[in-house]
Amino acid sequence: MHEAVETTYRLSDLLPRAEEAGAFFGEELDEETKGLNIEGIAVQGENIFLGLRAPSIGGRAFIVRANVDELFRAGREPAPATALVETIPVALGPDAGIRDLAPLPDGRLLILTGAAYGDEIPYSIFVVDPTGANLQELLPPQSDQLTRAEGMTVLEATEKEIRLLILFDKADRAPQELRIRH
View 1 (tube, helix red, strand yellow):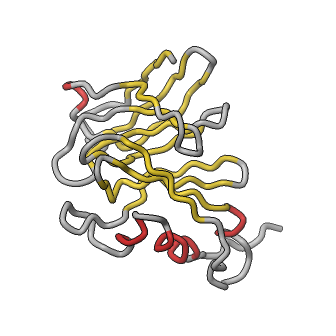
View 2 (cartoon, helix red, strand yellow):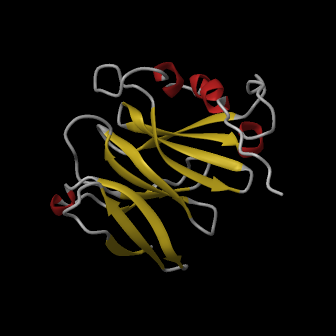
């Protein structure tokens, strides 16, 4: 027999505690109010990483790390004040936010970027370790990349190459396979 699925609101308990970004929880997603908006999620072991499209502050976007077991434990009690909430700033550039996250087998995270608010900017792809150190741009923005990239999945990752499938939000743009050497 399967356990019943239970709704949890614990993420709403944790996000206001995220350094810098938490102050924008509950605000509208626009350039003026910079409302906190989650667009990427990756799970590695006991950690859940939330990639924030917004806010984008001073050329930095944010990844929020929490403990999966804390968020999804049985019961309806709020997340305890001691629950893990770590904010990882990543320097992605002006007005750039995180559109998706994907875990790599070596523990690093891929970051798909796009506009945090307003007009679209060319997407790019970064890789970072879960502490926020060693941020590296793998695919710089190109002028032909203006179509809004919304998601990605890792098809294969080796020591030398990452194969990705990039998904777009426009029906006239087919998914695109990328091969990135690193």
